[in-house]
Every structure is written in C-alpha cells, then in structure tokens.
Length: 319
Ligand SMILES: Cc1cc2nc3c(=O)[nH]c(=O)nc-3n(C[C@H](O)[C@H](O)[C@H](O)COP(=O)(O)OP(=O)(O)OC[C@H]3O[C@@H](n4cnc5c(N)ncnc54)[C@H](O)[C@@H]3O)c2cc1C
Image (cartoon, rainbow, N blue to C red; front, top):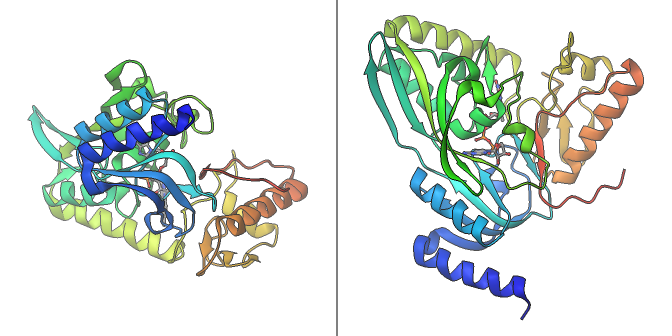
C-alpha cells in the first residue's frame, strides 16, 4: 500500500466517525450543479454548520488532501472526469440578526442560500440585499465572487467575514481586506492556483430598516427584469465577465453565435452569455462552446473575454 492510499484510508475512517453517512466515495456531482453537468467527486462530505465546515477543511488540510468547497454549484463547470480529493458540500445555513443603532447586522453561515436570505430580510423589513433575489447559490459563493445584480453587489452589503485560513485557522476579514472588484476578490484570485484555498465560514451583512412594501416592490421589479432578460433552464449564469465598455452577451451575439450548439449544449437565443444544457450535455460540450465563443469574439473584435465561471476538476484540453 503506498503512502497516499494509507493517508486516504485513515482520513476516510476519521470522516466516517465524524460525519457518518454524510461522507461518501465517488459521488456524481452533476445533480448538485445548476448546469447539471460534471463527473464524480473522489470523496464527498455534506456539512451542516460552520463548525463542521472548519473541521472538515482542517482535517483535509492536515492530511494534505486537496479539498474543494461546493456551494450552490452555480458558478462552476465540473469536468466530466470529476474532482480528485474531497468535495465539501456546504449546507451550513444558520442565520441570526442583531440590532446596532440605526442598522441591523445579519450573520449568515456561508452555506445559506443567498436568494432565500434576501427574501427573509425583505419579509423582516430589512433593506440592502434586494439585488440578490434570484441570484442562485450560497452566501459563501457570493462572497468569493463578489456576486451582484441591478447595481448592487456583495461589496456594498458586506461588513466582514470569518474565514478559515490554511495553517492559521479561523480569522476575521473586513470587506476591505477582500479587495473587491467587478466579480473579483482576493479569494476569487486563488481559483486555478495550486495553493490550498481559504474558506468562508460566516458573513456579516449590514441591513437598513425599510417598509416591507417598498422592498417587495423593488424585488418584484428585479425579478421581472430577470425573467424578461435571462433564459430558463440549466445554466451557469453569465459565462464571461463583461469586458470594459462591452457586454459579453452583445459580443457573442454580434459574432453570430446565438443558438450555436455543441452536443447537448447551446448558446441561448435569449441571452448569448448564457450557455444552456438542453439535456445530456457533457462538461466537454460546454467547454467547446466556451472555446468557440472566446475564439470567435477574439477573431472578430480583438477582445479576449475573461471567464466568470470557474472550470474545476480534471480537464484534458485538446484545443
Ligand atoms: C441562472 C443564473 C443566474 C445568475 N445570476 C447571477 C447574477 O445576477 N449575478 C451574479 O453575480 N452571479 C449570478 N450567477 C452566478 C452565481 O449565482 C454566483 O456566482 C453565485 O454567487 C455562486 O455561488 P455558489 O454557492 O453557487 O458557488 P459555487 O458555484 O458552488 O462555487 C463558486 C466558487 O466559490 C467557491 N466557494 C463557494 N463557497 C465557498 C466558501 N464558503 N468558501 C470559500 N470558497 C467558496 C467554490 O469553491 C468555487 O471556487 C447566476 C447563475 C445562474 C445559474
């Protein structure tokens, strides 16, 4: 037995002790992603609290097992060959509210669904997160990617986070520490590197009391706009970031690629920055669509678009 196998086995025993049936091997990930594509996780654990999240990641790090935090799976494209190491499905969802003078601070565990949290805040007459109505995924995913819509974003709502840092444990970061930019943060920049990544445990969000009717009207307007401008179906949201002075969707559309198809994946006719799994698409189908859009836009307009979606797992690139 080689060292890697024995380390893996020791870790599996420990994870079974701690998490029981919530720890599994060889778990298909497609059903956990919004695009419904992607291969299996070598090891998979579902955690239900921020404490469990810290424990799982600490154990994996101590054993030098690669780990990946899986939120709502709405901003990632998982390779058909899957992901080596441990995938941690984040279902830590506790939310608390506390009054601080004229505002209210909400502390949410990072596995909380962002849109559900926004709805909860509206129902309580607390304004500030209405932009997040209809944005899929978790608070943790939104903190990492500085998710935003309708002129709002995490940067505008976030006060601070607690983060698990490799070799250090739990630390507090202010919103400024995250160095936020358009769909960007210091945590997002760790994507695609071989470094062990930091993990968001909880987030503190500042809210302001407002009449429920006002908040609901604002949220309804945002929902109507989303329905009118975005396609339904299995997607990852916007595939590319908007390049400076352009919309990625406009560029892909102008390149004549609306409706372009590879296997079971198609560029939406309604919004060309949305790539849809029409049923039975592979991750490789989607990746080929990405390559076609990127190359065609570069050839026709000289613009090199940047992916908003993260490619994760074991990819074998042919072109
Ligand atoms: C239909 C549709 C509409 C969308 N509309 C919008 C929109 O309007 N605005 C917008 O900004 N985005 C939009 N998105 C994209 C997506 O919803 C956001 O990027 C979302 O914040 C991703 O969160 P997630 O939990 O799904 O992250 P995942 O896809 O699970 O993960 C994304 C990355 O974040 C990391 N991560 C997740 N949780 C943690 C954590 N706790 N600690 C550390 N790292 C973590 C993952 O490891 C991964 O690297 C849309 C997506 C879809 C499918």
